[in-house]
Length: 243
Image (tube, rainbow, N blue to C red; front, side):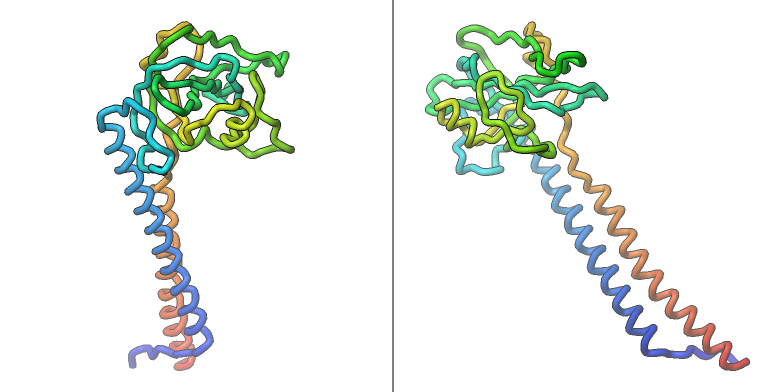
């Protein structure tokens, strides 16, 4: 006689719960992966568009992030700040940020000029990064912020030549007296020939869609394993009942 399947309510309910949770979490991770892939496609599309030649309005939100931009204007030399805890290739350093006033714009904008190493002996010593004098051209990519690291302790108030952990745009506008665009410009490698000693090898955004798809496979596998385990153990119980 063929082996009979022995149905038990409690294992059946437990299997339903585990399988449903696995499928739901797998779908959630799949949707997150799809959203990040859509963002990646949008970033690539914006990168191929013609560069902007004026600051976009703040109301545009994220619509212009990752667009290339070319501006003429002057750096506001006193208002350079240094974001600490920004490693590059394993070395400790700063991101050097300076306010820039484009010609014809009512706003100034923060330009992330590049990365500089930190003095290993005197941690308060600031890197030398000379600014061009007078009108100059800035080329780069628009970002919504200057990046964020874990804040340790209370944030310091922005001031000229300050070392900060993170950039508070509202506090910087109040301290400097300038009306600031909500965007930050990551200065591009095309300006690397200037003798300021800064590296402009900006890290690409880590979207991680592959990681989400990997998690989705794991959750779907858990749901499948729960169902298989329920079926196998049901037939084993039926076989044991025969003996």
